[in-house]
Length: 501
Image (tube, rainbow, N blue to C red):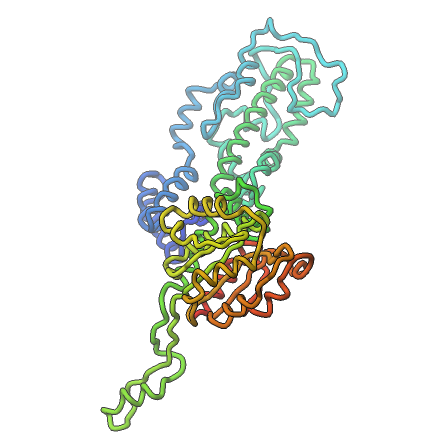
């Protein structure tokens, strides 16, 4: 039972419910008090000690219902005694643990009358053909059957769905079902669980029985085949539920990790929504790290002048120590984004990133250009961020890229507002179509601001090739970085928040 609770807590963590070691111990104590017999009491007890926020409580509800989904054992056994008989395949093939009934083909086979039994056989049937295929053969109907000899055959003919469920769960543990990561592994783990339950012995028994002459043995072979097919469907349902319970969040995290590293220019449009979620989470993480200004703590270096001033009343005896502190001010950011076709995706997500950090960087002014430059700050203030980005890309992405003209427009619009508290971020590939790069204006910006960062989505070995002016611009920047993924963007913005004081 301790393993059951440990697995449930693992599933909770996989569903992004934070559970600490202390909370885990509280959960074990709670279960020791209420036990597993009363499902409602168990759920209420665990709900008191594990989830904390409203979102976690909602995730807990879903996870608990999925994890503890087995029916009551006594009720299940009563249903077995009433609804299933040892010789009837009709009920055994139509129902299963976890609501897995509904195998229409098997039910049709079970209900077929003896007069419908003989059909034309496949003359070219391979002797090594898969036993799970649907062979056309004589239906022997219901009647006397011999006893199965294989372990799985005895379990199937025992008509106890509870025992089958327990065997299925044990086989899932042996097959490490909790390690499933992607949905395409469903078939693999279904096969592994069936093999752990004894599929090999059952297949051999079915093959031998179907070759036998006595009718009871052949009838048993047909019934075992039907029940084996039913079991396969139950295991598939079980694997799917375990995937949703244990691997769905892991698979999502795997996709997110890949999207963090992949070039934004290679991201398919259908992944934009997930990338937006990643951007907002990354921004929230950075905001929580940098939203509070550093205060004076009783650690670090002693501030001698302040210490002496505060201890003058004690005749030179130092009783009240004062410590040096660093005040981190919120940065004033000007973002200049090239939104021409080749770098539009990069600009989209950088603007989204910066505006998601409004708690830390409330003074973000944004500019977009392909040839002429315009300020789009008010556009973001009036619209939600997704609509504002779409309008920016629609209105300013046309035209031939001209960095020289963009720098001229920036000087006219707001160069006088740039001071020693300003950080300027330029995002673009620096490809100027062989026009005047206007490095003189970039030098003015460099001299006025505290920090000028140029982010280029192209690989470094492409800088300076063709119409790229990156080599010239590098001389008038404080920091030049290759930035073509969310991971790069997170690191650069995080460093910006660390260094701007």
